[in-house]
Image (cartoon, rainbow, N blue to C red; front, side, top):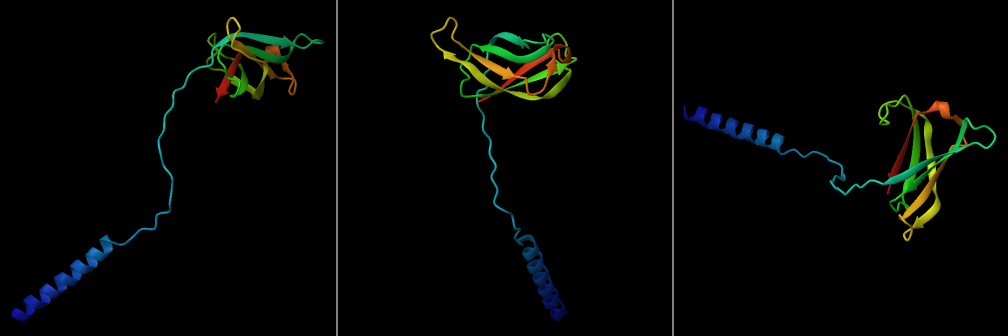
Length: 141
């Protein structure tokens, strides 16, 4: 009987050793980067929108100019046109690709009000005024 207890104890120790090694096996996890950050998001305040008609055909849009009351001189700005949007500009379908915008008139801090003018040229792809009913401006700092 004593031999069976010793044998049983030996089996128990061996089983515990095997189980412990299974739980302590290492995993290969590659280095990675994770993080969280936040920042204040403020809007670019638009004062006016001016649609520049083609000189030869007034049904064609050549550009859109935005008078902006926020200094976004160093930001990247793009314009989208949409068709089927509601009266608030919501919904609808984007027409074509976004258009790059550039600063036409630099930031005038002494102006009344302080402002700059962005121009978004659409002459690379002919757009008729009937092709859209809403315009959107995206500004990324």
